[in-house]
Length: 331
Ligand SMILES: [Zn+2]
Image 1 (cartoon, rainbow, N blue to C red):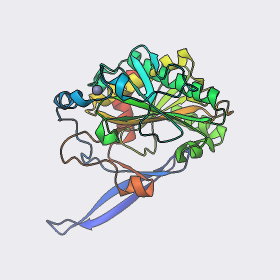
Image 2 (image 1 turned 90 degrees about the vertical axis):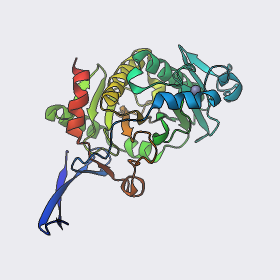
Image 3 (image 1 turned 45 degrees about the vertical axis):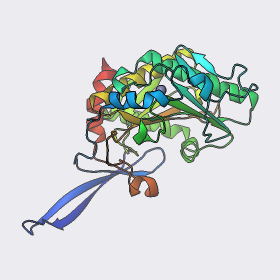
């Protein structure tokens, strides 16, 4: 189940000419079989030293998601999806994505007033409200167009993650087609999810905790740095998240993002991979991973390996990530 192989590289030291060896561990993801390389730690992901608050002040005057502009500059949903055009819960506001990625593409801000929202300030309430509008959106699309059964809730947080706008937000996609990973995960036999979780719980090194119906762990074979995974048992689509589950998921996400903040990270991607509602044996599951910090001339964490080989390569050992974040889940 948790398969790994050690590779050794040999080279001659440029100073002494003596042979030196270094190792790379290749791990295989128990669910999809994709492989990932765990590199010796070499500081590929430096902690944030960029003045995000100053950059927030610089970007705020033109931001279309801020108060006074959001109602004028963001597109409304068609009336057949939602009569009001925008979905609101608490401070969260959801609207149509100006740059659609699918036939149903939505953006939701945690709050129009939170143009600057460092990960350490992410609260359970902000996340729960933002998830709630995404859940309402997925349900509304599925009610209007029953053939759109594949829903995901995603995040590009800060520019290095692919976000074109500074203002923190989530993105929802609901479509007739799955993405590649939605398809790969939906093809995983139900028993394999249970076996993976059992193996991780027994092993304990990467298992973060169980918040009730949701289990959290650090990925055995991460596709991206500090990758965490969560499994929501009993439902297969974000559209099936009830109020209790939204609160529980938001709780876990707030713990995880707080952990990222403590590790010095401010940019992340997230994806909750929905399968069609009612897919038997498929747990709604999500991935959450850090991205390089914003700074001039920064190094992207995404290399030829990730982009073109679909192979993770990280120097943050999953067991160390689990150690850094795990205490928050155990309190
Ligand atoms: Zn803004």
